[in-house]
Amino acid sequence: QVQLVESGGGLVQPGGSLRLSCVASGDSIRLYAMAWYRQAPGKQRESVAIISGGSRDNINYSDSAKGRFTISTDSAKNTLYLQMNTLEPEDTAVYFCNAKHLWTNLNYWGQGTQVIVSS
Image (cartoon, rainbow, N blue to C red; front, side):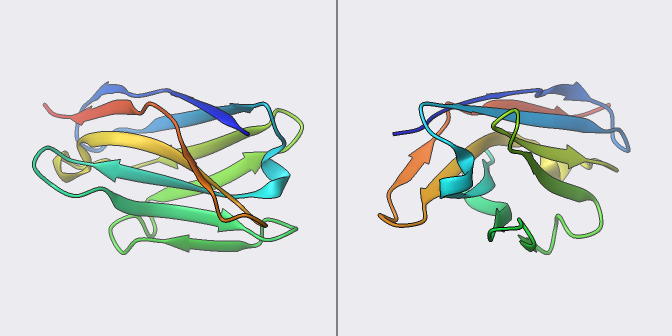
């Protein structure tokens, strides 16, 4: 099974940028649909961006992420990324990396990385 470790979170001012990383170990991310989720205080966890397909050409973003966030993978580094631009206070949340196995549909989660957007 795959293990996931996120990093890159932190405190950023509104309008700023962050790049989140999720390093996978124990299995190749090629075998998984990869995604970023987030959970704000008092709210349910929600999908931010999903990337799948053999060529990683199947990408979906939440409405709030469209035009500001970019999800990508580096198979050589077995890593998932989320480039977040033009951050808003509403983006404040714990961001989680998710891997869903293409054959078994089993889901795996990282421990999360905190993003705080505040002046």
